[in-house]
Amino acid sequence: MPAVLAIAYDDQSRAALAANPVAYGSCAVPCASFREAQEHALVRSFSGILVDLVTMVKAKDEEKVIAHTLTELYPTLRVKSMGNMLIPMIMPGNAKQDSNLKDFFFKTCAAFTARPLRQHRRRDISLPVLVGDERGATLNLSWGGAFILSMHPERYQAGEEISVTLMPSHDVSVTAQAVVVRIQPWGERRLPGIGIAFGELTEELHEALLALLRVPKDEDRDKLVT
Image 1 (cartoon, helix red, strand yellow):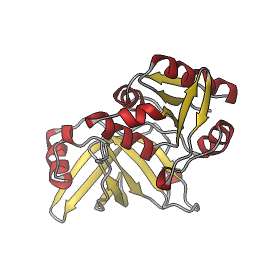
Image 2: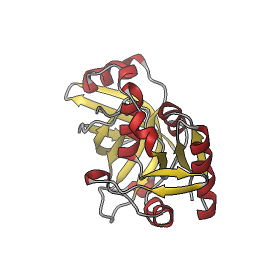
Image 3: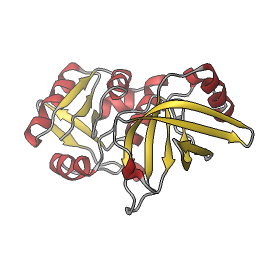
């Protein structure tokens, strides 16, 4: 089972959060702040979050925004630590969660596809594309890449380098080099296609994405607003 993030401002609570997942076949990356957790999540896949409830309450300003982002994206168990023991807290409304650690790890986290935090926010932008000579269309787009609708995603392999031509309008096209990072097969309950990550951000590609996304690259992190 992929790792979870264990977040607590207090050293003793953080140690308890980091130690408990081992009993459930998982491991935890201890984090002294939500910012630290974000930095880990940007470079590694995680399947959930264990967080000290007092830490959630104390989070302010940017820490609060990052906390909201992480807990919206990952399965989260808010707990109170008593020594080495973790007690899941009963949460109201949308914050409803598992009542015990076993269900959290073996059911909720196990059912979640581990993922990293995206470097950039995805936007629902649809435009025609060519992948080589195959016609397609984007379902979403970001500074980092896109998801391209394809009826034949089995033609591609994860890690494969491809050439993608974006066509924002009838008389404008931009060709970019990209790598296939995800394949969504045809025949499931989700639209088939491929997730791609752009390679070199050329000046031409930068200008095209800026016109489409309408927000500078450095200001478009995958972060929610509270």
